Image (tube, rainbow, N blue to C red; front, side, top):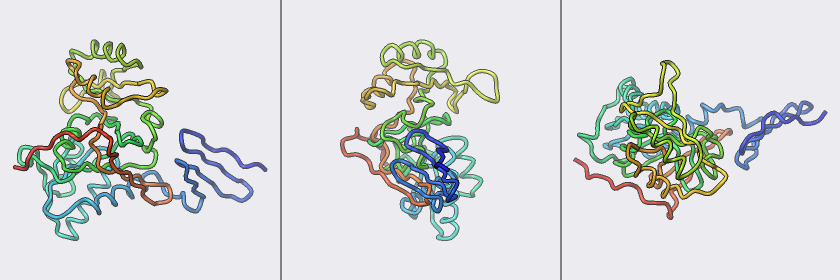
Length: 287
Protein backbone atom coordinates (compact mmCIF):
# COMPACT_ATOMS: atom_id res chain seq x y z
CA UNK A 1 0.00 0.00 0.00
CA UNK A 2 1.36 3.40 -0.99
CA UNK A 3 1.89 6.36 1.32
CA UNK A 4 -1.11 8.68 0.96
CA UNK A 5 -0.95 12.43 0.48
CA UNK A 6 -3.34 13.93 3.04
CA UNK A 7 -2.75 17.65 2.60
CA UNK A 8 -0.72 19.87 0.34
CA UNK A 9 -0.64 23.65 0.54
CA UNK A 10 1.92 26.44 0.58
CA UNK A 11 4.87 25.32 2.69
CA UNK A 12 2.94 22.52 4.40
CA UNK A 13 2.48 18.92 3.20
CA UNK A 14 1.07 15.98 5.18
CA UNK A 15 1.54 12.28 4.40
CA UNK A 16 0.07 9.14 5.97
CA UNK A 17 1.62 5.67 5.84
CA UNK A 18 -1.32 3.25 6.46
CA UNK A 19 1.03 0.27 6.92
CA UNK A 20 3.29 1.77 9.58
CA UNK A 21 0.48 3.92 10.93
CA UNK A 22 2.37 7.17 11.23
CA UNK A 23 1.88 10.62 9.83
CA UNK A 24 4.56 12.97 8.56
CA UNK A 25 4.24 16.70 8.10
CA UNK A 26 6.60 18.95 6.15
CA UNK A 27 6.23 22.53 7.39
CA UNK A 28 8.39 25.37 6.10
CA UNK A 29 11.09 22.90 5.12
CA UNK A 30 11.09 21.12 8.51
CA UNK A 31 9.99 17.48 8.84
CA UNK A 32 7.76 16.43 11.76
CA UNK A 33 6.75 12.81 12.39
CA UNK A 34 3.58 11.65 14.16
CA UNK A 35 5.52 11.56 17.41
CA UNK A 36 5.97 15.32 17.41
CA UNK A 37 3.01 16.79 15.52
CA UNK A 38 0.39 16.05 18.16
CA UNK A 39 0.12 19.69 19.18
CA UNK A 40 -2.82 21.64 17.87
CA UNK A 41 -2.63 25.05 16.24
CA UNK A 42 -3.81 26.51 19.54
CA UNK A 43 -0.92 24.84 21.33
CA UNK A 44 1.49 26.43 18.84
CA UNK A 45 -0.04 29.85 19.52
CA UNK A 46 0.25 29.30 23.25
CA UNK A 47 3.91 28.28 23.02
CA UNK A 48 4.82 31.44 21.10
CA UNK A 49 2.81 33.71 23.40
CA UNK A 50 4.23 32.25 26.61
CA UNK A 51 7.83 32.51 25.42
CA UNK A 52 7.40 36.13 24.33
CA UNK A 53 5.80 37.12 27.64
CA UNK A 54 8.48 35.29 29.63
CA UNK A 55 11.26 37.10 27.80
CA UNK A 56 9.87 40.61 27.30
CA UNK A 57 7.49 41.40 30.16
CA UNK A 58 9.44 42.94 33.05
CA UNK A 59 8.48 44.46 36.40
CA UNK A 60 7.44 48.14 36.52
CA UNK A 61 6.77 48.42 32.80
CA UNK A 62 3.96 49.52 30.50
CA UNK A 63 2.83 46.86 28.01
CA UNK A 64 0.79 47.26 24.85
CA UNK A 65 -1.71 44.42 24.52
CA UNK A 66 -2.58 43.49 20.95
CA UNK A 67 -5.65 41.85 19.44
CA UNK A 68 -6.50 38.42 18.08
CA UNK A 69 -6.57 34.78 19.10
CA UNK A 70 -2.87 34.41 19.98
CA UNK A 71 -2.92 37.45 22.26
CA UNK A 72 -5.46 35.66 24.48
CA UNK A 73 -2.66 33.32 25.58
CA UNK A 74 -0.28 36.22 26.11
CA UNK A 75 -2.72 37.97 28.46
CA UNK A 76 -3.30 34.73 30.35
CA UNK A 77 0.45 34.31 30.85
CA UNK A 78 0.85 37.97 31.89
CA UNK A 79 -1.86 37.46 34.52
CA UNK A 80 -0.13 34.31 35.77
CA UNK A 81 3.17 36.14 36.20
CA UNK A 82 1.53 39.13 37.91
CA UNK A 83 -0.04 36.74 40.43
CA UNK A 84 3.01 34.53 41.01
CA UNK A 85 5.78 37.15 40.79
CA UNK A 86 3.97 40.27 41.95
CA UNK A 87 4.83 42.18 38.79
CA UNK A 88 3.69 45.79 38.62
CA UNK A 89 2.41 46.40 35.09
CA UNK A 90 0.16 48.76 33.19
CA UNK A 91 -1.54 47.30 30.11
CA UNK A 92 -2.63 49.51 27.20
CA UNK A 93 -5.18 47.86 24.85
CA UNK A 94 -5.32 48.07 21.05
CA UNK A 95 -9.01 47.23 20.72
CA UNK A 96 -12.27 46.58 22.53
CA UNK A 97 -11.31 42.88 22.67
CA UNK A 98 -7.92 43.66 24.25
CA UNK A 99 -9.54 45.99 26.79
CA UNK A 100 -11.97 43.27 27.85
CA UNK A 101 -9.16 40.74 28.19
CA UNK A 102 -7.19 43.09 30.44
CA UNK A 103 -10.22 43.73 32.65
CA UNK A 104 -11.27 40.06 32.82
CA UNK A 105 -7.79 39.03 33.98
CA UNK A 106 -7.67 41.70 36.68
CA UNK A 107 -4.74 43.58 35.13
CA UNK A 108 -4.17 47.32 35.44
CA UNK A 109 -5.79 49.07 32.49
CA UNK A 110 -3.97 52.06 31.03
CA UNK A 111 -4.19 54.38 28.03
CA UNK A 112 -1.92 56.51 25.87
CA UNK A 113 -3.01 59.72 27.58
CA UNK A 114 -1.31 58.62 30.79
CA UNK A 115 1.35 56.42 29.20
CA UNK A 116 2.76 58.07 26.11
CA UNK A 117 5.68 55.65 25.84
CA UNK A 118 5.37 51.88 26.22
CA UNK A 119 8.20 49.53 27.05
CA UNK A 120 6.86 46.76 24.83
CA UNK A 121 3.86 45.91 22.66
CA UNK A 122 2.90 42.26 22.19
CA UNK A 123 0.64 41.54 19.25
CA UNK A 124 -0.24 38.89 16.68
CA UNK A 125 -0.05 39.05 12.90
CA UNK A 126 -1.88 37.61 9.92
CA UNK A 127 1.40 37.08 8.07
CA UNK A 128 5.11 37.82 8.58
CA UNK A 129 7.56 37.77 5.68
CA UNK A 130 11.30 37.11 5.67
CA UNK A 131 12.04 40.84 6.09
CA UNK A 132 9.71 41.15 9.09
CA UNK A 133 7.05 43.06 7.17
CA UNK A 134 3.65 42.24 8.63
CA UNK A 135 0.09 42.07 7.42
CA UNK A 136 -2.26 42.92 10.28
CA UNK A 137 -5.89 43.90 10.50
CA UNK A 138 -7.70 40.65 9.78
CA UNK A 139 -9.69 41.37 12.93
CA UNK A 140 -10.26 45.00 11.96
CA UNK A 141 -8.06 46.59 14.67
CA UNK A 142 -5.14 47.74 12.50
CA UNK A 143 -5.28 51.47 13.29
CA UNK A 144 -5.18 51.20 17.08
CA UNK A 145 -2.67 48.35 16.84
CA UNK A 146 -0.32 50.52 14.79
CA UNK A 147 -0.74 53.51 17.09
CA UNK A 148 0.12 51.46 20.18
CA UNK A 149 3.05 49.77 18.42
CA UNK A 150 4.44 53.15 17.34
CA UNK A 151 4.53 54.25 20.98
CA UNK A 152 6.45 51.17 22.13
CA UNK A 153 10.22 50.74 22.39
CA UNK A 154 9.81 47.20 21.07
CA UNK A 155 7.04 45.46 19.15
CA UNK A 156 7.00 41.69 19.67
CA UNK A 157 4.96 39.48 17.33
CA UNK A 158 3.47 36.16 18.44
CA UNK A 159 2.03 33.69 15.94
CA UNK A 160 1.77 30.05 14.93
CA UNK A 161 3.77 28.54 12.08
CA UNK A 162 1.02 29.16 9.48
CA UNK A 163 1.74 32.91 9.66
CA UNK A 164 5.42 32.50 8.74
CA UNK A 165 6.08 33.23 5.06
CA UNK A 166 9.03 34.11 2.89
CA UNK A 167 6.91 36.77 1.12
CA UNK A 168 3.55 38.38 1.78
CA UNK A 169 0.61 36.63 0.18
CA UNK A 170 2.25 33.23 0.31
CA UNK A 171 -0.06 31.92 3.02
CA UNK A 172 -2.48 34.72 3.95
CA UNK A 173 -5.00 35.05 1.13
CA UNK A 174 -7.41 37.64 2.51
CA UNK A 175 -5.46 40.66 1.31
CA UNK A 176 -4.00 43.75 2.97
CA UNK A 177 -6.59 45.69 5.00
CA UNK A 178 -6.88 49.41 4.36
CA UNK A 179 -8.96 51.40 6.84
CA UNK A 180 -10.79 54.24 5.08
CA UNK A 181 -13.24 57.04 5.78
CA UNK A 182 -16.65 55.68 4.66
CA UNK A 183 -17.45 58.46 2.18
CA UNK A 184 -14.17 57.85 0.31
CA UNK A 185 -14.10 54.07 -0.08
CA UNK A 186 -15.14 54.05 -3.77
CA UNK A 187 -12.51 56.55 -5.07
CA UNK A 188 -9.83 54.97 -2.85
CA UNK A 189 -10.64 51.54 -4.28
CA UNK A 190 -10.32 52.91 -7.82
CA UNK A 191 -7.03 54.74 -7.14
CA UNK A 192 -5.29 51.79 -5.49
CA UNK A 193 -6.35 49.43 -8.28
CA UNK A 194 -5.17 51.92 -10.91
CA UNK A 195 -1.79 52.57 -9.26
CA UNK A 196 -0.90 49.12 -7.93
CA UNK A 197 -3.20 46.61 -9.59
CA UNK A 198 -5.04 43.84 -7.84
CA UNK A 199 -8.57 44.06 -6.53
CA UNK A 200 -10.04 45.78 -3.46
CA UNK A 201 -13.17 44.52 -1.76
CA UNK A 202 -15.24 46.26 0.88
CA UNK A 203 -15.22 44.00 3.94
CA UNK A 204 -18.77 42.96 4.77
CA UNK A 205 -20.05 42.16 8.24
CA UNK A 206 -21.20 38.66 9.23
CA UNK A 207 -23.73 39.27 12.00
CA UNK A 208 -25.15 42.50 10.58
CA UNK A 209 -26.25 43.80 7.23
CA UNK A 210 -23.75 45.99 5.42
CA UNK A 211 -20.01 46.56 5.81
CA UNK A 212 -17.74 46.03 8.78
CA UNK A 213 -17.40 49.20 10.86
CA UNK A 214 -14.17 49.49 12.86
CA UNK A 215 -13.83 50.66 16.48
CA UNK A 216 -13.07 54.06 14.94
CA UNK A 217 -16.22 54.22 12.78
CA UNK A 218 -14.45 53.51 9.49
CA UNK A 219 -14.73 50.95 6.67
CA UNK A 220 -12.10 48.40 5.62
CA UNK A 221 -11.04 47.66 2.06
CA UNK A 222 -9.17 44.36 1.65
CA UNK A 223 -6.58 44.69 -1.11
CA UNK A 224 -5.92 41.43 -2.93
CA UNK A 225 -2.62 42.38 -4.52
CA UNK A 226 -0.60 40.61 -7.21
CA UNK A 227 1.59 38.25 -5.20
CA UNK A 228 3.41 37.10 -8.32
CA UNK A 229 5.70 40.13 -8.39
CA UNK A 230 8.07 41.78 -5.96
CA UNK A 231 6.84 44.80 -3.99
CA UNK A 232 8.67 47.52 -2.13
CA UNK A 233 6.21 47.48 0.75
CA UNK A 234 7.65 50.55 2.42
CA UNK A 235 7.13 52.61 -0.76
CA UNK A 236 3.70 51.08 -1.41
CA UNK A 237 2.57 51.83 2.13
CA UNK A 238 3.73 55.44 1.92
CA UNK A 239 1.96 56.02 -1.40
CA UNK A 240 -1.31 54.45 -0.29
CA UNK A 241 -1.22 56.54 2.90
CA UNK A 242 -1.05 59.70 0.76
CA UNK A 243 -4.47 59.01 -0.80
CA UNK A 244 -7.06 61.31 0.83
CA UNK A 245 -9.48 59.30 2.93
CA UNK A 246 -7.04 56.51 3.79
CA UNK A 247 -6.77 56.32 7.58
CA UNK A 248 -4.11 53.59 7.77
CA UNK A 249 -3.04 50.29 6.25
CA UNK A 250 -2.44 46.82 7.63
CA UNK A 251 1.16 46.94 6.41
CA UNK A 252 3.55 47.14 9.37
CA UNK A 253 6.93 47.93 7.84
CA UNK A 254 10.00 48.14 10.06
CA UNK A 255 7.98 48.10 13.26
CA UNK A 256 8.42 44.56 14.61
CA UNK A 257 11.51 43.95 16.75
CA UNK A 258 11.13 40.19 17.03
CA UNK A 259 8.69 37.46 16.01
CA UNK A 260 7.96 34.16 17.75
CA UNK A 261 6.43 31.30 15.73
CA UNK A 262 5.02 28.29 17.58
CA UNK A 263 5.82 25.06 15.70
CA UNK A 264 3.90 21.75 15.42
CA UNK A 265 6.43 19.98 17.67
CA UNK A 266 6.08 22.46 20.52
CA UNK A 267 9.26 24.40 19.77
CA UNK A 268 9.31 28.12 19.03
CA UNK A 269 11.34 29.67 16.23
CA UNK A 270 12.40 33.31 16.35
CA UNK A 271 13.06 36.01 13.78
CA UNK A 272 14.63 39.38 14.35
CA UNK A 273 14.12 42.70 12.63
CA UNK A 274 16.22 43.00 9.47
CA UNK A 275 18.74 45.80 9.59
CA UNK A 276 17.86 47.06 6.13
CA UNK A 277 14.15 47.46 6.93
CA UNK A 278 12.66 50.95 7.22
CA UNK A 279 12.86 52.45 10.68
CA UNK A 280 10.04 52.30 13.19
CA UNK A 281 7.89 55.37 13.67
CA UNK A 282 9.37 57.81 16.22
CA UNK A 283 8.25 57.21 19.78
CA UNK A 284 6.99 59.86 22.13
CA UNK A 285 8.68 60.48 25.48
CA UNK A 286 7.15 58.97 28.58
CA UNK A 287 4.79 61.15 30.57
